[in-house]
Image (cartoon, one colour):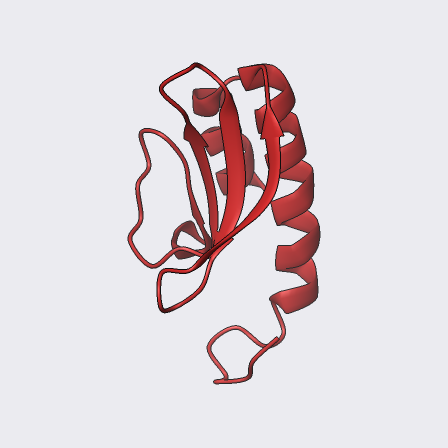
Length: 90
């Protein structure tokens, strides 16, 4: 899977756009981020409302990064969905 396929799969899974940010779909204020570093590696992290980053994992390939990101984000989104928009911290 590449980032374009990841974007489509996340949308098909119903994960709201403001919950995630990937190359080509940059959403300021998103919770979950996937970025490619200058050295070609990939990094996934959580970013809180103050901009602090909590690195989840780094990857050597886009395929591995996208597959992990999809699984990680969709699982967490399903758990958080009942609380989204209700002002509750998770």
